[in-house]
Length: 139
Image 1 (cartoon, rainbow, N blue to C red):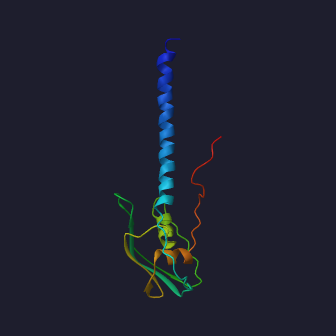
Image 2 (cartoon, rainbow, N blue to C red):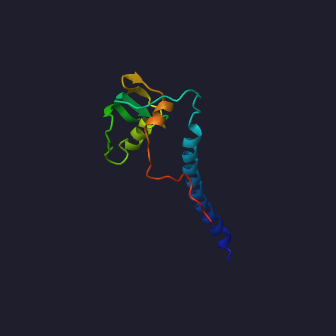
Image 3 (tube, helix red, strand yellow):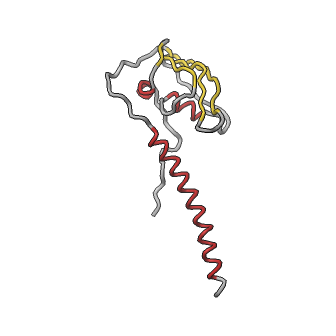
């Protein structure tokens, strides 16, 4: 009976650690949503294109190693591409750069030989993530 006075608080602390980790994951997910910059209002352009090029594109998350380094890629009108590679090789990061959700650290995104903004890129390229929920419901 007396041992419950000591073990119950310890068990509660252990369970709390798990909940803290879940909260950190949820916070990271929410930060992606909060960081999206507002787009400037303006005229929508006709974004049909003949060629989309990435030239020397690199990406780095804050205070981390580069996730992409000096990527060159050409996508011609009507082409469909598949990004394949090992886990954590940068496929999702590249897809998010292509769709304008992430900002590249360096390099150029070129549409028909002219640089393109993130807002225009989001109108042109569609990215469908594997996981679509940010937070799961708990009852």
